[in-house]
Length: 284
Image (cartoon, rainbow, N blue to C red; front, side, top):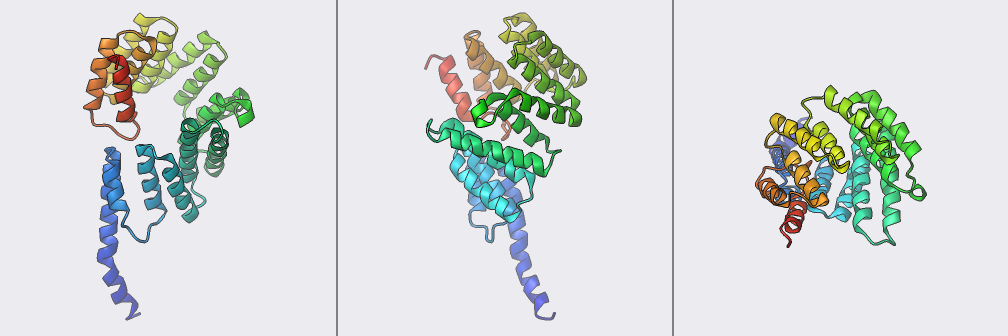
């Protein structure tokens, strides 16, 4: 015991320094300073699952989905029962599927589905994993394991945890089936049940605009602005919608310039995507 105690005391400054560096790396990641966060994480030894997860999230934010997946695999190896690691692996393989060749995309997509399913199996209350699995089932073709019946079952699981989000997923399903009145009903229910959630008003505004109901869409956007006037999510969504529909392009350009000056988080669309949209809006 007399030998162990001094050893532990000697290690304490190193452990404290690592904890401080990890906390600072998390802070940098939360401000989308991914490269600076990686610089702090790289020299840490030994690396545990939490460090590998954050390294993976940084690479994910940088768009290097292969390195992201490699580090999420290492995080899972250290703690194979954690749902979030499976979820992040699913996201990384999903993005690899979206950005790879037609020859490799199906294999990556199948891995994404398997990881999302495992994440939900490990923790049926993991709402983010449920949302990811719902999106996969909703959008993927049947030969890759997608399907509206599967999506409907996950929607029911989501509704049991979060009734508001349940209405949103029901709206997505109804829209896929071209049951537009039903979709609108669910979106309006979600907005009424969560009047301070900007995302619900954005969902409604997008739906109305896609149905050609531009004035109603703008009213929904204005309601969202009153709740969160400087929300990057709102600014980006509005600009993206205008550009997709080829209208209000000058306004879209102004919104994107404002977005690029905002303090973003990893949950916001990357600056690179906003820069692409800005070039499109300005005819570049």
